[in-house]
Length: 134
Image 1: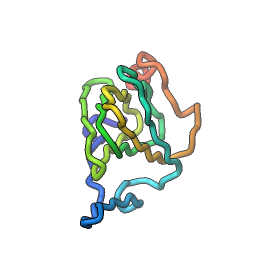
Image 2: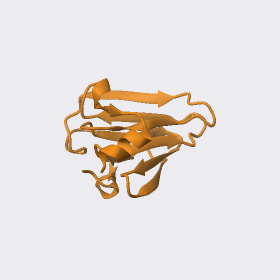
Image 3: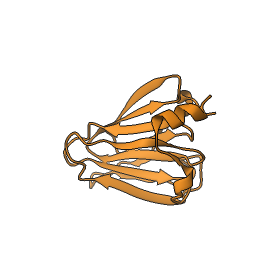
Image 4: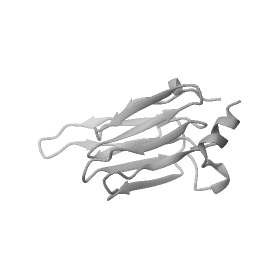
């Protein structure tokens, strides 16, 4: 079973240029094959996203613009990570509960996933999540 320490910040290569920087996310950056990419934006003030865990899927989150907090829980420990740099991402292992909150105005959260959407991979209730960790 995954633990909080399996979730980590990973630097995304950054190419400096006076015309504007460029960052590239390839499979050398993240430890899984990319199967799905989506992004969250226009999140209203005070709204929360996430609130689930994945049985198998891993995710890599990047704050492309603005900032937000990711609250991670492995059933024993909880940790809050602030994402606010487009050249860093958070790798979230499977079997980790995650909640996203405190989105700044104009923030964009990019999510790169190790698998396509599959409802059966989700654990959507926190108590159900805790049961799987026992």
